[in-house]
Image 1 (cartoon, rainbow, N blue to C red):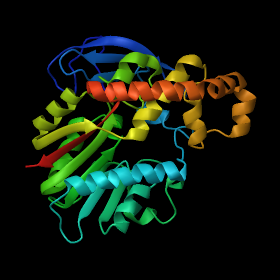
Image 2 (image 1 turned 90 degrees about the horizontal axis):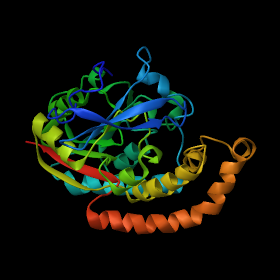
Image 3 (image 1 turned 135 degrees about the horizontal axis):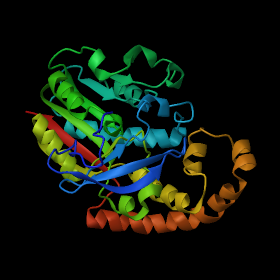
Length: 319
């Protein structure tokens, strides 16, 4: 990802304003610091890479990839299926879906069970994929797949757009491969949310530097309009991502080892390692988790009432 050498550069989301330094955050895996810059016009944010010769790919290592608990995954996939079925009204037989950054492939399997011809793209190592999903997951970047024009009824991006350095290139390519009246469904963290403003560098969904961009409702609306999408709607996103964002962010404020609960739940760290290496943080997690959950309920309701959801879903149609 390329930036200007000085600290002032044009917002890559809206192209309408100079970004200004907001705060500094550390990667919870490498512990490297990264500057977060905010746009005064659209409210989106950009992460500035500090190491000139380092590739963003180096921050995706074995500690990054995990595996959700099955009941959580089922709930998330069910919510995503409902969104696709709600918005994708114009269908072929069978309807075609592309999920960009499809993870291990469980959402694709769910959609295929509903009669969709669903495929995905994924950058993760092959061992991250579910057995049986390899046949309908394309390894690598979207641009290298050469999908046909006007082919897909729906394209989904669940927490993947914020990882991509070439925002416009991806969205233009998505518009090309969507059928007329085809739909794009996106879910991303909201940088203008209540939880982002409260927790800042401890915000769970910040995830520097892998999240290169953090969008606001205004910013993503402007970006999609520029590309040529229509009927753009922004709405509150995943309940689980939203609620857990508050819980983990509260724990991050109080612990040295960030995202410990998240890593444990996603099988990124074993129980014995938590006990041996992070005993003090484990104790804090156990003591604080219930109060944190209660506080999170209050913050969750407050954010929804104020229209400041931590996660936003976005719908757009190809004209």
